[in-house]
Every structure is written in structure tokens, then in C-alpha cells.
Image (cartoon, rainbow, N blue to C red; front, side, top):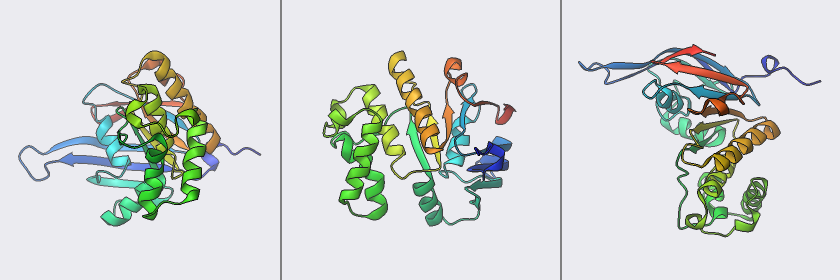
Length: 234
């Protein structure tokens, strides 16, 4: 029997998340105001909102790159707000994949080597199983003929496909995609979006997809609208 999302353990839980900058200073600013959000395995959720609405701060907080000022943030049931920096780094590396608007590939390395980087960074060495894992992921994103191509020699759409494969290298429970199609032409953007959706379905990976494109958000399971640091609609 297929489980409904609510019957599954949540991948992500935010309860009353607030984030302020310049704490204790005259220019202290609260950017996130009591955000509540729950995401389950296999959910593909768009995040929309105007520039300056707090979307990037929200993603950085969920991605454990910034600590919330208050509230509770759980990844796969683990409360993160009291974890040490070392434990946060470990949890982020194993549970969260990132795809950004700019691919952030290492241009001097091949597509295969770029996808292997998270695996290598975690273990501290490379081995044949890592290589096979990277090959399989690049095959899934349609880049087998370009395994050994230098990243700088790939097209923009191909580079983002490598970035998607790299984000999935550690088999994360959650992928955070921050406008990954923003720099692509419409055909490449549609291809990368479809790829993320397929990966979400195949691997039961939860995806938060930040976009300004209402046509893409309409193809997501949910759309969260963030305005002035509040979740306006979900």
C-alpha cells in the first residue's frame, strides 16, 4: 500500500523559525518571522516571493548554513538548533543536496570528477565504488557521452545537469534548488526542472525549488509564497 505523505516521517520540520541579523545592534533586523513548514519524502515544493522577501535567508537556514535566532528546525527528525558546527556540517553533507542558480562546478575538472567531489570529501579518498556511483548519476541525467569532458567545455544546461547529479551523490533526503533554471534558456530550464522532478519521484527525495516562474511553480506539488519573511500561502 502506498503511504500518504502525512503517514511518513517528515524530512523537514520548521516550527516558529525566526532569523535576525545584527543582534543587539541599533540596526537589528528580523528577516524571518515565525516560519512553520513541513516537507515529506517525495514532495516537490516551489518557493515563490518577491526579491527581498526572505527566500534566500529561509533556504540558508534550512540548509544549515545559517542558524535560526529562535524556533525549532528538524532534519529527518533530528533537532538541529543545538548541534555543534561540526555536527551541522556532517548532517548537511549527508542529508541535504544543493543546486544553485550558478552551477559552481570546478571548471578544470571533468563532469565525473565534479559529481564525485561530495563522496570524496566525505570519505577523504576516492575509490571505484564512488566512480561507479558518479557514472550512474551522470547516466541518469543523460550525460554519459560527456563523462570525461571538462566542466568548462559543457553547455549551461549540461553544467546544471552535472550540478543536479552532484547534489544527489550522497543520496540526500532533501534537495534545495535556488533558482537553478534562472540562467538557462527555456528549453534547458524545462529539461533541468523535469530532471529534478524525475529524481524526486524515483528516489523519494524532498525538493524545495525556489523560482520566479509561475509556469514552473504550477507544475510542483505545492507552492509556498514568502512575503516579508512570512509564509503567506501554502
